[in-house]
Amino acid sequence: MKRVSDLNHPFYRPLWVRVALVVVTGLWASYENFVIKDPMWMVLTAGIFVYAAWVFLIKWVDPEDKPAEITGAASDEPPVDEKNDEDVDRR
Image (cartoon, rainbow, N blue to C red; front, side, top):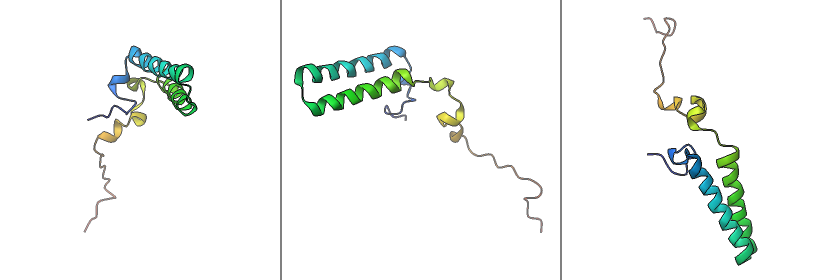
């Protein structure tokens, strides 16, 4: 089972989901900045907004476009044991 906190989760693939997450965090940061005006929450929500924009819009690479080494797909396969004639202990 994949976790939702995994950035390669299929939930994050559609562009509208990623844009919606960035918009929601931006609205939350704006609300904290202009209405609540609590410095701790201003910084916290602004940081969440910047992180979401960076991860979901700027740095985003579709998981299907990544090579297997980056996504970890190759690690799911069992290792191949190649034995040479030299490796076999001859008694």
